[in-house]
Image 1 (cartoon, rainbow, N blue to C red):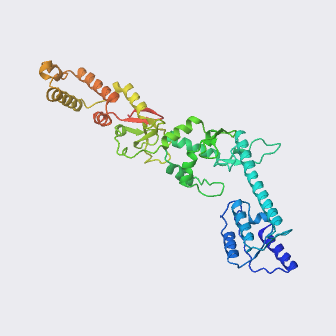
Image 2: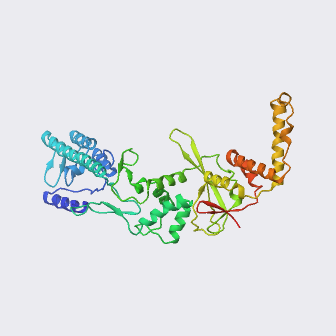
Image 3: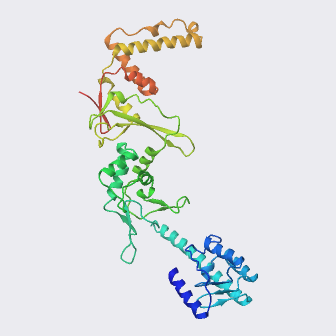
Length: 414
């Protein structure tokens, strides 16, 4: 019965038995936990102050379903401050037998409550073992009631599932940020099941949820993982790719040098190419670094050109080194400076100049054009393979050729 119905029934009982009701108190807090109901605690205090000497309640378990509150009630009866508890069907006074019966009824209510919790948890674990996540389906899915004719409890939401998949693809393959994905969803009018725009926090929580590739943890944080029977919206490989992109860059990794931005244009929209560094945290500690180049989307915000790793980009540059035009005069000066620096290191730091004798052969810059081109090519290849970001950026400044980045492939601009 509702609380209001219980009150009306007890008022009718009081009128029938000639009981005076001084005050009506009600609250909807559960009687499961001790000391968690402020109105009930106030009632006990007022009985101690002799403001009341009896309680009318629908049933004993309305007073207590825990040992702590039950002990407080019985203690007031032992002190003679609580003379009577009247329920709809029976009364309890300071009689040993009646107090004993009261404690049994309240204890039975506690037992039923505890068993209910155990049974609920057992049912949840069974449902997990069967492959069904026992909670509200996440964005892109719908819950479905199971019966003799339905064996799928969670099914894709036909209105939203494809957009969730695109969220993963845009971040993994096109380098979109969480905010860029939210802006895209807002522009196309995407709404949640509650007919609201998706918040940025929901975008990130969705992209981090392993449920979408087929696994789930229940309860969250318990370490208990299950293989779901629902239809995955993304592959494990795509999910892992997104997790790498989502890794937060630790402090101290900002203002990095990305040497190849200046010689590339996006093949999709003609905009500039940008780069970003992502760090993946390792299980044993530390980070592994990955650098990605992609369209900066300054011209076309919806440009879908995928990103390319710096390692793949360098491999393609090396493969095309014979087609690259260089500023030979600039590279020659740079090589001459490196040779002079090498001499100073040998003489002033290692003190080996006099031991090794004349190293003049290192000063001989090739005279012919063909030899200069071969030297230039070898120098650039060396820097591309083992040079630092700053050394690569300096070497790139001597390249005259411009490139177009299309579908993870570099092409020489005409």
